Structure formats: structure tokens, C-alpha cells
Length: 128
Image 1 (spheres, rainbow, N blue to C red):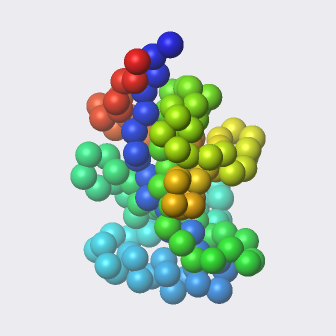
Image 2: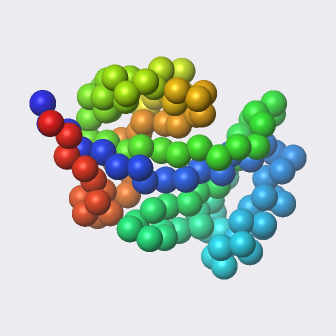
């Protein structure tokens, strides 16, 4: 069954001890204000860039190293996970409503539901 997906969000995963400094740095580096998510104090957004690409800042838990990861959004999570596994990815953690995966080199990425609305509709790739 066909489904659609797109690489859509770059997340800056910052542990508590780096969260404020990292947020301030990336806001300054991009020339954007870090807009807090009023429903979740661990999230802020630097907004949309080219082709609806989002940059988000996430406060992680203690012990998680600072890192970047990308989200692939899709209208069919199981189908997209299977497609990516066929390309060499592995399932890392079932997060309930999404999957945390590893690429062949061990880099973390997530497969999530649609997050960007109109940008998803405009830029998603249809897979057979």
C-alpha cells in the first residue's frame, strides 16, 4: 500500500546542563527566536526554514549526550519503518506513538506521524 514520508525536522537534543546555553546559541546562529512550546517546557522551536524544514530544540534527560537527530514524518509509521529497515536501518526503541531508529552507522533518528501539516502535503514523497 502506498504511503508518503519526508525528512522534516532537525532536533537539537540538549541535556539540562546544556539546554539554556545551546538554545541561546542556536537562536543566535540562525537569527531566530526560540519560541517555547507552552504545553511542554522541554520544547522550543526555531521555526520553519527552506521547504518547510523545522528546527526544534528538545531538553533531554540526564545522561543523554548532546546530539542532533532528524525526524522522518509519515502518514503510515509501520510502512515507513519497514521501508527504512529494508534500506539498512534498525529499530532501536518503540516510543509508543513513534519509533526511534538507528541508521546503518548507528545515528539516531525517529519515524513520527505528520508534524508539519501543509509542508508535509507539499513536500512528502509518495512510496509505492
